[in-house]
Length: 340
Image (cartoon, rainbow, N blue to C red; front, side, top):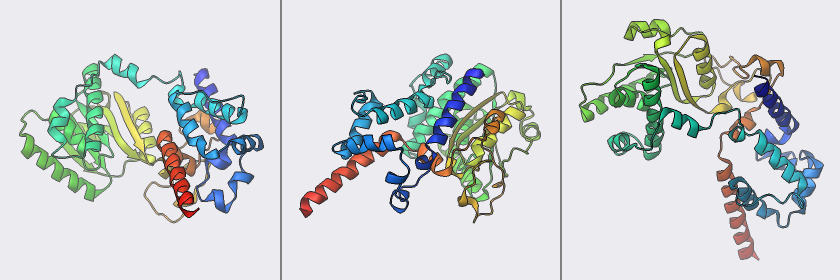
């Protein structure tokens, strides 16, 4: 626990130190002159000494991919910044179990032919099929390890995940979503899937339209539909948007669920306790006044703040952003050559 708290302190201190440009928007670089006003002086000098600066995205990609170490002697401030960021990133933390170890522990293989052949052309896009197939492989192994056969799918949306688990894996699924329109679409998908697959050993699939908040009690729903308590059930969420990811964590901790798997998204829609976001001022959304970051008492004691723009940037792939930067530089250079 002390090791985790120590790492969290380092991360919070690093983010706080660089909050001004971590929470900036692209237009802020022009409207607020962030290049001169926000970047630390030594870091700014290092960047301006690069010739040409347009080479930075390529050099950064090489650094991230491990193809070439950063030249710390020539550009020490940028090098120190990148080293610190790498060391504090979750992917390099020894406190988090790598996905490969989880796959080895659960004996998950890459054989997804059974699933992808069934769905890729009939019900889902290639991207959605990949997401569902990978999640199903994981969930099936967890079910096997924990001897559970009932799942609550939080924020089930159109029902791709829950219908697949019900038809292919044969488990009982309770789908929860706040949108009645989405629930109608999920019911249609479920019906079409049933006509196509014609399986008799499918699990029971029930949908409930309700707003999922930390205050709801899951056990009565499970007992009513399946006759099982929460400790014999798993909690699942694929692309739980905004507040729902944090809400799912609270539900798992407070309601004695057997296991919990969650892939969140849209973290810019989450509200923070210690950081105000103007984004919500013009909205009146049920539950939007619930500040669900931070969740831990330790980070609350630190009054930790991330910021909406930082949360948006964190949801993007660093390599893709760098590639986009490289392409923009190339386009700009071609335009300048033609104009010249």
